[in-house]
Structures are given as structure tokens and as C-alpha cells.
Image (cartoon, rainbow, N blue to C red; front, side):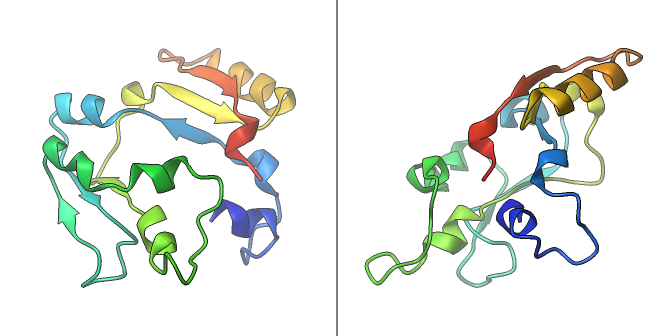
Length: 135
């Protein structure tokens, strides 16, 4: 999706990727909070190829090498990379703000704006510049 935003291919959104914030937490924090969740080993809409799990022990079902890759296009040798790269960790119904551990942004301008907004909040996740997370 971020690549589609980068290319201007998302109908109804023209803000570009520089306005996108990445809110992050951990699987362990979600599990400790007792929230309902599910993990997929690929794009959720691609059943029956994609499987779903709800145990921390099943994190090994994720293709972590693809997750670390900057590019994950399909090839003759690896025809299923795109589906696997779109694995998801989904939390049911509601994600508490207190579980957000950090906010990744592209640059200092956005970081400053986010910090100004967070100044009034009780919970202030760390805001950090993560240019490698963007195209």
C-alpha cells in the first residue's frame, strides 16, 4: 500500500507518503494485554494459500527473510513472495493507544508536528525518523 501511495495510485488520497505515520507495537504487548488477535502467513484474501494462527509459537510461520527485504516481487524462482510479504497481524475490534510503542515518520517536519500533537497526550510514544521504511 505504501508503494501505491508513493506512486499516487490510491484513489481519494493525494498526500503522498511523507504524511504517512507508522504506529508500532509488539506482538508480545498485544498478547500480554489479552487482546484477541490473528496472524496470517500471507495476504489474508488469498485463501486457501494463506493460513491463520493465534499462538505466539506460530510466529515462525512468517517468512522473516522476505519481511526484511526491501523488494519482494515474484519471480520464476520465487512465485509466491508478494503474497507471503503481505502477512498480517490483526487485532480484533480495538487497539489501545497505550500499546503504541513508537511512531515512525519520514522526516523532521512530520516528526515535529507529531511531537507537538503528542505534547497534550498522557501517553507519548517515541517519535523517530525511519526513512528506510519509505520509498
